[in-house]
Length: 227
Image 1 (cartoon, rainbow, N blue to C red):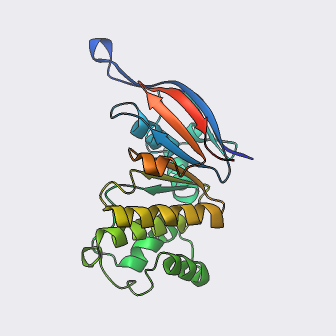
Image 2: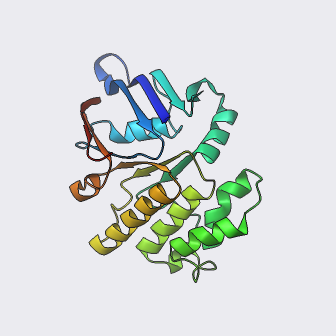
């Protein structure tokens, strides 16, 4: 079942002699529960595409549908609610709130949305992430791998339609990188979460069900690895 549809998406920065076409007529669909890796050289348009998929940056033209909702027909208030409820974002640099402890960082999206925390689901997430003994710790009391686990928990707590990860292992050593990808793959399978990961790491890309290669703002290759 289709969860994501992109139609003729373009993003242009600047004008005249300084114009930069970051995305150029990009179209594709993603099925619910699919794990897609997006690869390509620096400056190819990968991060721009991810930001548009996450509702963070508006396209210059084209359409984005998430679960049949036309995302960029929303006003800013509705778009902010959509981001909180439907998109889980995981960044390379964690983006945790330094004055909030682990539990507060994970549950922040629910609190912003005025939703109650479901203790059983929170416990399931923190146990899967092996954070049950760190709930009262602040981010500066955690290792890099633990901080990234917290950011994964925060992305999952609203049970969003899509998880978007931008170089989620970029700041981690090989051991922690492997563990983080195992966790993302676990949640992808356990909760049938649609997972889209930007990566420069070929080993990570080859774990995906499908690899999209972006070059010069266009899809250069769309390769299904496994069904």
